[in-house]
Amino acid sequence: MMNNIITFLLVVIALLQTKLSLCDNEPLVLRYYKETCPLLEEIVHHQVEIAVLKEPRMAASLLRLHFHDCFVLGCDGSVLLDDFEGVESEKKAEPNLNSLRGYEVIDEIKYLVEEACPCIVSCADLLAIVARDAVALRGGPKWNVYLGRRDSMKASLNGANNFIPSPNSSLETLIANFQSQGLGIQELVTLSGSHTIGKAKCKSFRQRIYDYKDSMSSSDNHRTKDRVPEDSRINMSDIWKRRHIGPTRFHDPNKIRQSIFSQH
Ligand code: HEM
Image 1 (cartoon, protein in one colour):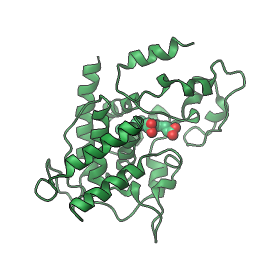
Image 2: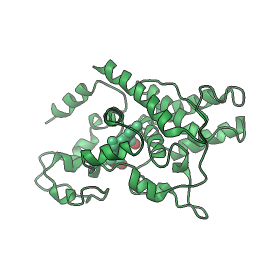
Image 3: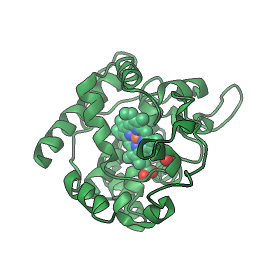
Image 4: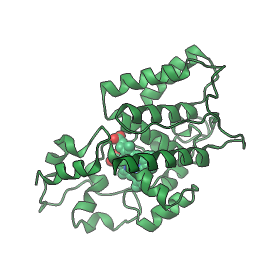
C-alpha cells in the first residue's frame, strides 16, 4: 500500500514539474547547473538537513512553499517576492498569510548559493530542489528534479488568492482548480497525499470534523471563523498538542489514523 503511494507520488511529482514549470518553451533538464554551479545540490542538501533537524515540520513547510509557488502562474519563484514598486507580494494572500512558512530557509540557501556561484541559480529551481530534499529527509520518496526555471519579476496577489485551493473548496472546485493547472484527478488525489506530513491550524479543518455549518456558509473561501463549537466532543487544543495530529515523517497513513482514533 505504502509502496504504491510512494511510486504514484513520484510519477505525479515528475508530471507536476514538467507541466507547471516550462518557461520560454525550453525544456527543463537534469543537472542543468552541472558546469555553472557544481556545488549546488550539496549546498542545498546540507542546508535543508540543518533546517529539518532543527525543526522537523520545516520539511512539510518547504514542500508546501514549492506547491504555492507553482500554482500561481507556474513555478517561477514569485512566492518569494516582497512588496516593491508595482509588485504586490503573494505572501499577503489569504492562503499564505500567517500560514506559509520557510521563507527564511530559502533566503539562507539563496545567500550561500549566490556566494558559491553568483547570478546563476534561479529561486524557482531552488524551491524545487529544496522540496525534494526536505521530503526525502523525512522518509518520503525522492525524485529527479529537472532544472532551468526562470524567476519571475512579478508576483500575483490575485492569482495566489484565486488559484491556491481553499480547505473549504468542494470536490468539483478542486478538480476544476487542478485542471486549470493542467493536472487531472489522479494528480489531485496523489498530491493531496503531501498532507501525510505537516500541520494545519484548527480553522483549516475543524469544519470537516464537526457539524459546523456556521463556517461553511462561505463555502469556497479561506475565511472561517476562529471558533470551536461549545459542544465539541473533542478538545481541539488538546489534539493540537498531540504529536499524532501533525506527523513530520512519512508513515503508513493507516497507522496515523489508528493513533488518532485510539485516543478517543
Ligand atoms: C488539494 C488541494 C489542497 C488544499 C485545499 C490544501 C490546503 C491546505 C491547508 C488549508 C493547509 C493548512 C494551512 C494552515 O492551517 O496554516 C495545508 C497544509 C499543507 N499542504 Fe496543502 N492543500 C492542498 C494541496 C496541497 C499540495 C498539492 C501540496 C504539496 C504538493 C500540499 C502540501 C501541504 C503541506 C506539506 C502542508 C503542511 C505545511 C506545514 O506543516 O507547514 N498541499 N494545505
